[in-house]
Length: 213
Image (cartoon, rainbow, N blue to C red):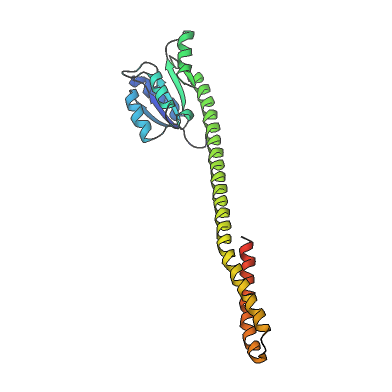
């Protein structure tokens, strides 16, 4: 992993916490170790962990109940759970998977098997991270498209509001221009025609700009 995995070890045995902590730190994982599920919940609220190694049998809340609780919360579906157990009956192992655990580790811990499980966990977390980035990118694209649609709607409304008075102004200017042209006083016509033509031209330019919105 390019970034050390944020890993939580939950086991009421201090010797097991020490063993797992040592094996995980050899892989440059960022390790936090606690003794109970309640402590694990508090730790996870302070810092969301990517990987949890949880003993099935804990004082108070069990490891499986902890798994179910974390899975039920936002972002919990991306946490990789490895349940540590000394049980080996098929029904017990099915219970581990039914609780939402990604895999299990049998006691006593075999470092080679642990290494294999961790390699799978790393790949799973990398894939979850990739999906998260793709999801964020898609959400950003959709939000941008929504903003552009809103801008388009606003522009159309502004264009409509501006175009109506412009049409009214242009119409009246042209009528006035026609009246000036029909006037007999040539000198007055020449003085009035230039500013009126400039006003008609300016209003026409703005009408073109508005129509492009």
